[in-house]
Image 1 (cartoon, rainbow, N blue to C red):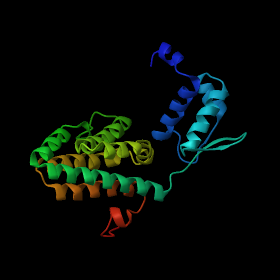
Image 2 (cartoon, helix red, strand yellow):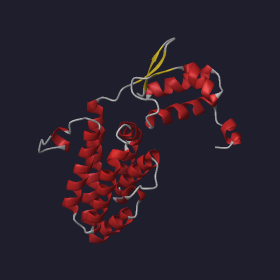
Image 3 (spheres, rainbow, N blue to C red):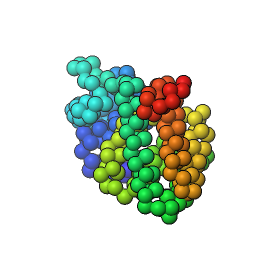
Image 4 (cartoon, rainbow, N blue to C red):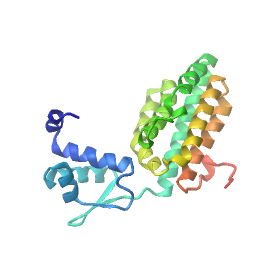
Length: 225
């Protein structure tokens, strides 16, 4: 962002964007107490716009304010994390079903598109870039179904997804994630809807397990550990 553009952005918005970015990429971890003064000094602004940003983020459920102490980063519970991933599975499975009904050509087209997506390799991506590519891969699948209501619902999960999965974004899981993306793309290209949904479930189950959370009956109906 240029200095001219930054100066045109209201200070409260800049503070909000700065803090929210830190919340979503894990820079401000669960349980951390954020200081108005420290954020204000980092952004070279007064505390008032930072306080406004904190209030906005509190209304969104990210922070809990404590007068004269700061703002606590509200921890994501296991139940919340699992609920978000369950919602993803439902919406992405719908997309696969919709594409299957539209026919082999529709499935083959999205499969080929996804096969060339950066999220299927990610070798040259930083962790943060891989995180963004991961989300874009799945959003592309949902968008291909052509249902704007489902797409909007999926997009409302964006911030929660990014915050939850930021703690699972490690080099140790990247090989598994990119392999599963490539595998899912190949299966879609082959027009195998049921297998694609099975692979999707396994992929998302791996995400909750990487967070140290049990899959639950929907994500893991077999109950395997």
